[in-house]
Amino acid sequence: MMRILILSDGKPGHFKKSEAVAKAIQLCRPAEVEWLDITLRWHGFHSILKRWFNWKGSLPSPKWLPWFYNMPGSPQMRPDLIVSSGGKTCIANAWLASCMHCPNVFIGDTRGLSPDLFDHILTLDTSNQGDPRYVIGIPPTTIDPQELREAAEDYFDERPQADRDVRYWSLLLGGNTNCGAFVYSRRDWEQLADAVAELAERHGIRWLITTSRRTGRTAESVFRHKRLQPYIEDLYLYGKDDRKIFNAFLACSDAVFCTEDSGTMLTESVASARPVFSIRPRQSRLSRPLENMLNFYVQQRRIKRLNIADVHTVSIEDVTTGFNPGSRRDLHALGSRLLEGLQRAA
Image 1: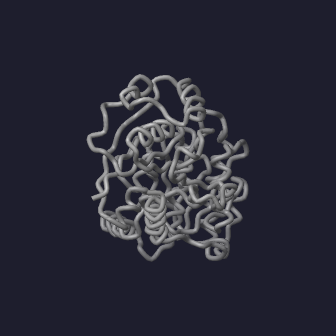
Image 2: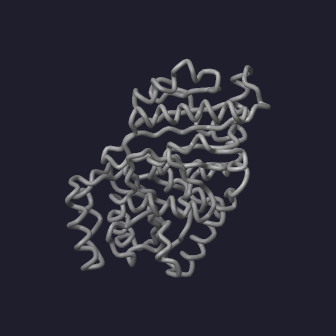
Image 3: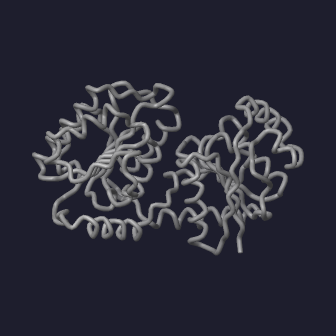
């Protein structure tokens, strides 16, 4: 049985991608997974280690890892493959792979670390097209069609008052980012709320809305206002509701609207194979990885991008045409490609 070691920096958006890579491989062959939590003790170590790694191409024994990283211990098994996502895990990924003489996969931007240190890099950056180390495509996700169907059935079973024949659209709300790249004003939230009401009136749909940890009280107060109650089937408030409804909302929806500040929510929305509209506020600044991701999704016809002021213009034709939804085959194909590449490199 294949042994996969996943390095995690504790960020859900990162370990979900790593988990999806492991799941892709498990679709193709039996494999067991071990998780190792690992975080840099000091952010400056990243630059120091990166320069050393790019210069030397190798590092000392893994016994030195605890000097640079907080980690609970050494891996319990000798892995056949190391997988990680998130820039702060890429050096540990390459270090352990070099010391343990096993192949490795990294998901995302290596932040200047030589690509020669990885067997496969999963990225949306098409500038590396043609290099066999790079797998260009949509970030992997564990969203599963069968699980979505079951989530929808469970949701309606628990809400007998909900009409299964009504068309539902979902709205996934992020919020302000710490770096100031995305800033939502009260005017932005109110304009989006106006669009929610207008689209429901015009198209006869009802909304499934979820907030997230960044959404904040201003947005919550706007969407809890009684004027919106006739148009909202369900409003999930992060931190105030212990239900697990994200998959259910995706499964029940004919269309998904998601704010652009959350790459994870966008990726999982795309993986649901629903038409997805991404929404950006007036004040927004895209990082290079996020811009690459959005551009790739647009090129693949997985999303349509909207300014927050234009959400109210969406028509039924916009929802039903111009999209190329993904499928479960994407994950199986990823697993096959990774295994084939690793076998050739062996």
